[in-house]
Length: 163
Image (cartoon, rainbow, N blue to C red):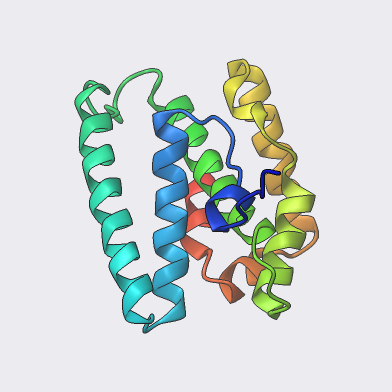
């Protein structure tokens, strides 16, 4: 008779992800760890390892990107808007994974549900779709007076970036 091994590694399945998704996950883990404050030594050591791996991955990813966005180029507004909405969605999506009943988490979950019911797929669409969906979301934020909600949970920079 074979007795199955049950440990943390066998219970967590992250699925297949590419290097960019891995970097995003590592960044979220590090942000969460920093928000907790002082960690037990064993976890602190593990987080140091995640930080080192994330830094190495970020460096490797930078090597393949080419030049930074030239804000004077014709495609720069689209790329900046895509990056801003993607970052905002990823930031709010992090709250979906938190088990907390903290009011800040509830606000983030509510914002994510309202603004990204289908994720951020619209940023990979046409120029027209990107700007139309962006305008629609900004009008919703204004109509529902959600600026204050973003500020309550530390998202003023994200909101400013998408405006």
